[in-house]
Length: 334
Image (cartoon, rainbow, N blue to C red):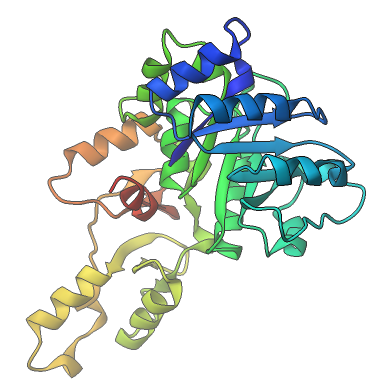
């Protein structure tokens, strides 16, 4: 996950000093907030003279057309407009370069992106736009998951409340870029904050239940009625590489992964037609509870002596409530 540093969050140093510090610490992007202020392009021109870092420009305006000529003269790598301030549907001229994004605040549903499917990404504002130091609203975990499911080929950017713990969760959810402002500049140093945004030893304020894939979105089959074919179909249709196995009351009974299927085939390679559901089901996988903190999740991962792809999530009664999938996190770390 790329870190986009919000350059105006440092209220003490000059812009030149801020940019030099960010360049020295090798941040990925420079996030420039433009609250309907054309003078921002004077700063963009200066930044281009000081460094070659990509610029991530977020414009809040109800008159986007007044920015077209400036964007042609000073092109940026990432260009985002705030949806809620637009009076009419946004149409960006074809000759304006850079990846295009639509920014939405927490109450706005991700369905507004339907009219902008030619754009490259969505920017989810997880706190109040323009207010520094806000707390990440965990409702946005659900929005991220919904957007990922609906637009699997689009990127997700997040702005607001991103600290070390939230950064870990966002990476796990497949977020491409997160904007960091006050957290980055209020730390003892930018280097210290950047380390916190990528390290795995973090303080915990969120639980697994806040960001897991909920049961209703998980592939599943039922132990009382399943067949070998129905299990394989559940794994295939789910597109996660596994299916949960439950009873009719949603009591967790096990999991079937692609690895479990492979092992069953190897055991009965000479007689695959004799494979039965019990051959496929791992009835005692490592599980985690929905009330577990992120720190407890990381501690559980460290105890495993094998690569972890997912953890079934259960409640105190042993009922399945969801799953934690680490596919996005693994991809982001290589």
